[in-house]
Length: 313
Image 1 (cartoon, rainbow, N blue to C red):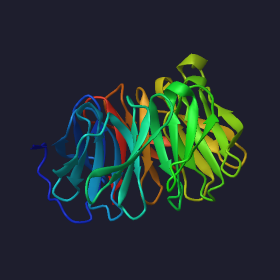
Image 2 (cartoon, one colour; image 1 turned 120 degrees about the vertical axis):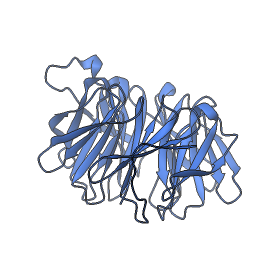
Image 3 (cartoon, one colour; image 1 turned 180 degrees about the horizontal axis):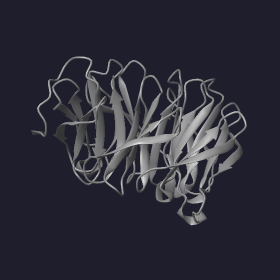
């Protein structure tokens, strides 16, 4: 079912911003230039993680409450397919050829790999408790899985399924990989940190602490993070602290904080990396940030409890 909020001509190339609404059971679509509402796409229950196909024709949406992944046509803004029988999917990654989905199964404590052509499970690998973040390395040979309940990052060889575990600070959530592929950053929510993992040795080599002015340490809960394509600056959503942390990647130093909405969670760049979009779950809106000035340009209402944000340009 598709509910239109605003008359807007849909065109190939799209220029659409997609926001998954965890408690709204749908994806809000905005014009990515002026942020006017385009549509609400009804999905399965509890949509969270979203990933585009390599050609950006399809958007895959993890619907944890419905145990499935919905497949959205980016031009028609309709659900055109589903992959079912997936235990509580939350976040996932897609290989570079667009052939396999790597999905964290929160309740099962596993990573499942699905073939998109057949929509069948190829493999399941046990990991720690409550897995969430999933990230493939650049050549799709290794997949990283963050298990919140076990304070572990699992490093899984895709071909063999062999697993190596790395202990982290409390409640690891999401990943970013430096552009040179040498260092993996993982947010550790309850520690208020980002841990730094050397990819060659699978060892934690350091961490970055966050504490915006006037905030209590227990309110700082890092979750999602993005790094610019030059590997110079990282931006980290800090959850209950209602801020984004800005980090100089080379020095590993926090250089500033940006006040956004309540409980910032998902985050993404636009294609030119001039703007950042942040999903604020507690205030039911998104913040649009100008990267150069580090200022919020606008806050835009979306659906109930926004979780993830993705842009197609």
